[in-house]
Image 1 (cartoon, rainbow, N blue to C red):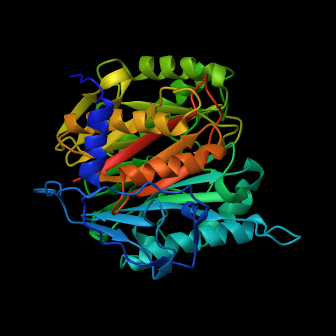
Image 2 (image 1 turned 120 degrees about the horizontal axis):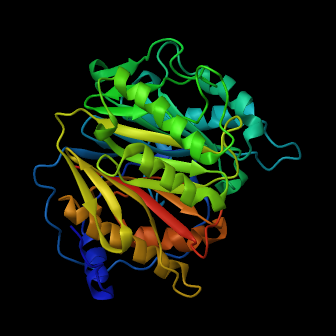
Image 3 (image 1 turned 90 degrees about the horizontal axis):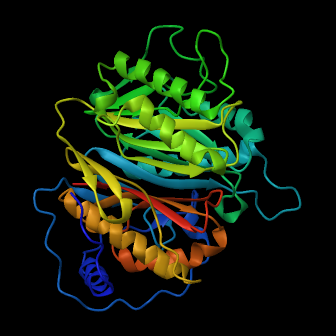
Length: 425
């Protein structure tokens, strides 16, 4: 099913409707630094509008903001929809002193930020089911692992770790997580010993959170030989094999995958990664798949994949929107791939509006809307575009905005922005 992207008039109508949402924002936390601590561009004045339709039949939604966190930022520290908590990227920054803070300090700062959001939601680190760690340099991987692992006493969440081209505020690390409130619904998937490569850090292969399975980021090492293929195609093929092993241990198969994010270290190999992924899955089982280019991944791998899957009992619908926008509706959750903005001269704001217009149209196919967005990942080719992106983000989400991660990636062609999101009802 396809749909034409909204016109500028339709886009304006979307923004006016969004502006009427009621606010439940609390005051935010000084215990941690968020991306939104950076200076923002001047924000447009919201126009008075009628209240939009209520989220009929939707799960309860609540913005989570620790006491004392700065207000008036373009996104929320956390968003709780039903039992699932989406936590914005928490930064570890070097500070302004003559001697910058080391990774041990910065990783603790980021994890304390995650903990502050968890506590504000009445949860703890034992509720975490998946984390994404973005490093400014992979040389800090071991130091980050040492701090990160100290926050868990038993079960560790699934995790994906990549090196970003740059992080806001000259941060050395950014950590975003997903938590699940019902501990009885959380369990770790443990494939047979030796069937997967040895983990490079404190993370579980996959973790169940109710009917949703979060799979760690995986690379193309052969678990038997410990070798990594010379070609990126061979690496992707082995990666899918490793993930298939994990899914099988969970009682699932590739057809149950609802969302995929791919990372490649070489822009020129992006098409090869996508083609190898398509061949490994087969066209019938291929889920929506985003892909971005980053400078480096753990170890010698040149491609890394991270998946989300759902139990067969969950209704899954593949979504196709305008200009190649893709997504999946799994039960009451919609996953939208990283959509690319169409360049509009030098107007970054217009490019951001274009992305959200097409994402809004895609969500409509999944019986959701922008007001249901709980988490957004913004990939910028240049962090200098962040103020302009922030201004439009506030237009799109003027009340109770979603959680958010923003990182810089390697530029691909002329694009300046990619945006992925999760909407939950």
